[in-house]
Image: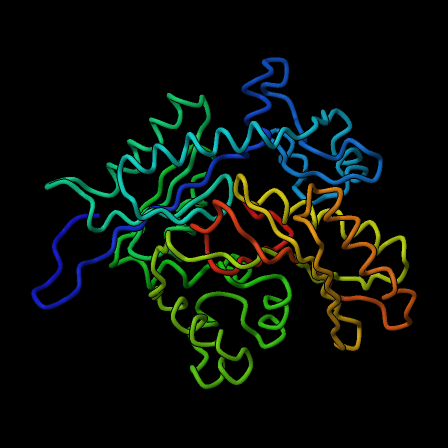
Length: 368
């Protein structure tokens, strides 16, 4: 992306989204040559465990993160399960962020394995954002032995879409003149900020693609999706005014999902919380702590409740987060309405994650 802004107009932003390729699984394959080229799942060691991450070899069989390990094993009988090593992943993440800092201080981490970079005011004369993205990917490979994919565009929404276009180990650029048209044929569930529940609501309204979304008036979207309606109207036109914000304080991080079939038993609820808690825990930055656990439950009739507990100490580990969440959720079933949506949040955060977004709500399912 090159070219100065027209006189009197703000400069075109240069945003890069960097996303490590199958990060946890790739680290395990890097460190154990016997795993290279083979289907690997990180996590899911226990019979009722879940897959935290899957190598690309495993993904060809349909194995995905957050999938129950028993189902993953059925899909891929030769799947190799490896216990996660979060200390190692966090250390590598710090290496990668140090590389980012060579090019810009405007870094907004989203998790251990992805971040936005704003290069707008940090390019040398004649230097392009695309060239910097290539340098970053080369340095990551040289220093960590891992591959990263990158997307370059003029806003965060399109940069994130671009990084997914040529995975793994790819680079894709969406210039300003191509942005509005790029989203037209995109399935609505691919839109960042449209989770499974919202995608279902949109599809029920006949909104299947970016073109369908663009055809709906702003008033229509606001009436049905509240303040998010303005965001959906904008991104359907390739517009996203959100800034890369390294200085925003994250107050909470949560994960939730809507089920195609309602949860109806205590055992199902017990098991469903595990991938959600895992998703929250592995998206905490190194050294971040939190004291308040909240569980969100939406019944089949759309009645919603939340239950929270603040501990007298920071949550120590994933096992404690999961135990508190299960204790909070246990009274919700049995109930004849069943549970259609379940979520868990850790809040009251403090520590190095002060450089992350104020509130992060994660979709359970990894679409990369």
